[in-house]
Each structure stands twice: as structure tokens, then as C-alpha cells.
Amino acid sequence: MTISVKLDRMLLERGMTLTELSEAVNVTIANLSILKTGKAKAMRFSTLEAICKVLECQPGDILTFEEE
Figure 1 (tube, one colour):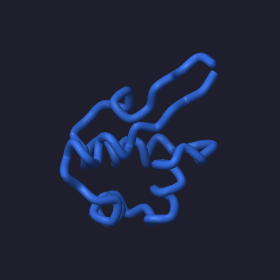
Figure 2 (cartoon, helix red, strand yellow):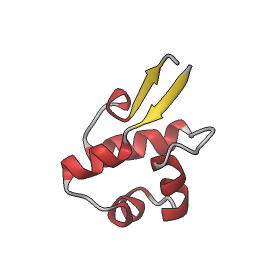
Figure 3 (tube, one colour):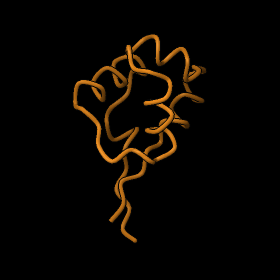
Figure 4 (tube, helix red, strand yellow):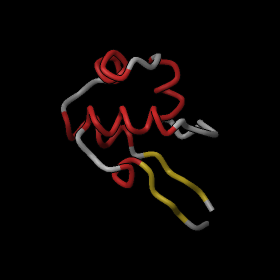
């Protein structure tokens, strides 16, 4: 079982850079980069909520479950 992060796709669809998202949600670029590349092991709901508010999306637009 794998949780995949589609943050790069959402940023592209919204025409937003990682730097702009970082400033908008008050999370470091380094932490968002770890999330974007799928290397994160956990995420706070407050961070997910802030990202969804800024990108105007649902958590399922960013996170997907894939069976191996």
C-alpha cells in the first residue's frame, strides 16, 4: 500500500510555484519539497487543510492510495 502525493500536479493546474505555496501556507519550501517528492512519512491535518484552502481543492486531489 502506498500513499502518493500529487502536489506537483495541483501546483501546475493552479499556476502556482512551490515558493508561492510556501509563503501562503507558512510552511518551509524544504518541507513542502519533501511532501511534493513523496518522501514525507507524515503530514499534519492543519498543513493539509492550509494547502487545500490555498489550492482550492480537496485532500483527495492531493493524496491518492495505490495498491502495490
